[in-house]
Image (cartoon, rainbow, N blue to C red):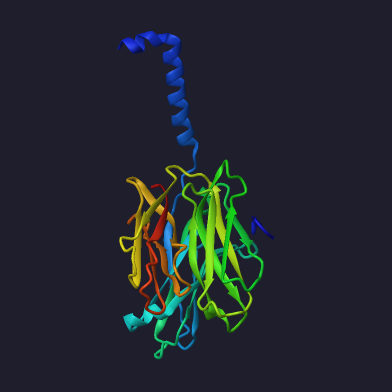
Length: 311
């Protein structure tokens, strides 16, 4: 269902009344900050693919008992480092099953051109936290129509934007079976104030006429203590074949989630290779994007988003 839950003198001049009002305002601000929930027990759970001969690979990271997914990420690696250019993320997806109480994060990637050795992997991270600390936890989903357009973009917001904020995002480029290498992800990120999640996919080859759609996910919770979204561009901003961006949380905060995006001027054969949150004690998010085939085109910078909250 679209956009719905998956589950001195100046002081003296003030007078006593003015001072009391100021004190009351400050006290209210402090009380509001203290009233915000604090997310506890944050851990990052890794997983990697185990299907060595496939041109599409998936990794599933599952949260341990007593915890629930709040975000995740994925990245690709290859035995021959040059082969990473031929790989692209197509799925970054949180999941939750109320029936069995399990949750976690899927990451899938494909070969956009043949990797002869097939010796590559996709890795997933699930960021999980104590269920008891996740006030207002909600997994949201929306999706585009299924069309043959060259590019799809979509966003989904929290059910209560006045109260909730996005702590995790996800995106899936959906194609027919056997056509997964035709459309890849270019954006999976929160907005700058964390009220929505955005995603974008694009055909690898504009000549491809097959149908495809884009799913976008947001994990929302009641706005936690110290919530912020930190945004940082890559230092590379011209025609570099690989670009890396990292966003750092402010002091006293840790990463809950990560997001990233490629510029709208990027050509079709540019895709995401990595979107990951660091370990909770490291305090950053990292994004890598690159060319499938070399180009002299200037495809601008990429952007990393770190979703952070108080430790």
